[in-house]
Image (cartoon, rainbow, N blue to C red):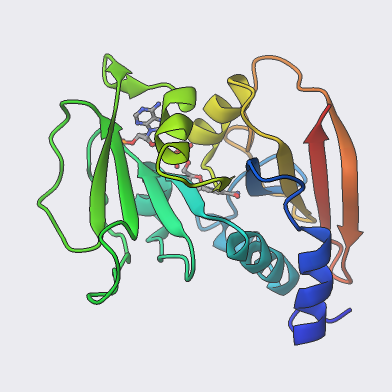
Length: 221
Ligand SMILES: NC(=O)c1ccc[n+]([C@@H]2O[C@H](COP(=O)([O-])OP(=O)(O)OC[C@H]3O[C@@H](n4cnc5c(N)ncnc54)[C@H](OP(=O)(O)O)[C@@H]3O)[C@@H](O)[C@H]2O)c1
């Protein structure tokens, strides 16, 4: 199947259809050594064409994409085409971002999920601040997710980075782990998903491509 063709996208979309109405996924890529980043310090040097096609399909089914502010700063994040982007931040600092809300679009194209009482950045069209209860500036992953569900967002995809993803995993909020294993042997500063306890999953799907990438869907048992 050619992942870049319309048929290929439909084929992938069938396999990646959300299994139920409320569905939380993690979508990340790791090197074989467990690194979330390639030599350039971002996931850009780990990914490939099929991985990007799968990312597109997963994003297309999502109501909201959740991402940590450090990823936005490191990768200069772009807005997803169809879904809301929820940026999790204590500081409100999104330096280097390439989020460019549509001036004719709704107010909540970007949801800045911030601790209650934290200083938000200057107001901008398309950006809505979502305050969440926090302790010492840290919101709980459960509180972050609830704030999105309360807004009617049901298909949620967490795209990392490792710090944020680990909190969602630790609170047992992830229904399906979509993990791309890229055939790269690169140095690792830390794992792409820093867990403190094992998580019991079963493989709902495995795809491989000609470049030696594999695409796992692991569901919480
Ligand atoms: N391989 C992949 O699939 C993948 C995916 C995404 C990112 N990445 C890579 O991962 C790296 C970034 O990951 P990271 O783990 O360093 O950071 P991250 O998880 O992207 O973001 C961490 C930041 O999110 C905010 N945050 C997270 N949890 C919070 C909480 N409970 N309460 C309040 N704020 C919270 C804080 O923002 P403030 O500092 O603004 O307060 C924190 O500094 C980048 O190099 C990126 O390229 C790889």
